[in-house]
Image (cartoon, rainbow, N blue to C red; front, side, top):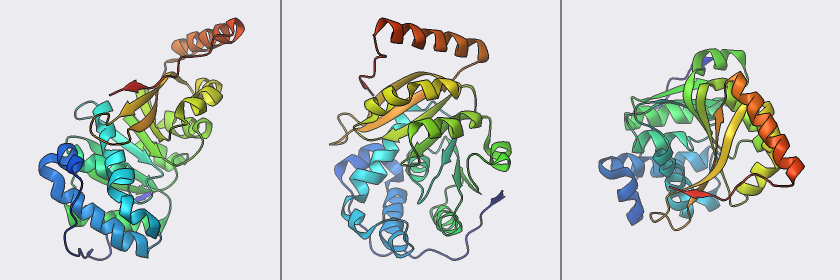
Length: 252
């Protein structure tokens, strides 16, 4: 595993006006969010990190959709974003929440180069980039022990839990950005989360009242061993009684 340094300076075309919600979410750091929009709309498209059809909805569907999960994260903690890709959700989170220490984990060189260029251009001194896969021993050694692990469109929940839980300390949390079917995915994979050492899983809605379409997040906590046994027994009791877990999204 290694840190990635930028190769070239990223050029920025003229400014793009963001939606009103962006000022609420990013506040004084809105200019950095604008710079990120430009990077995604230009270099991101040219290098195949973002599809051209996504450009008209970069603000709502991608940048703001990711940034609002900051409402779920305490002050000053360490966050690892796995399968970061073009930097979603890690970069919007780093812009909106400069108090967080964020590590972006991404295996592909062209993506890590893009991330390094943008981080340098935007002056995001709270971001570290590590090239590798979340399940690799080197990544676990360098990025492990985090307070929160984030992800977006990386893998099905069962597999995601197996990658995320080893990277957080006990009682640390996985925050997986999902679509409107998040509750169904949680119900389907709840047993696999338990096997991965996760518990207290729930679906949360972020950005309610700020975004036109809220962000759905599956939150799960890494449990201590004794708590894992209790979680398994609880799940078994629910199945025997025919009473499924409560997956109705909670609003934030």
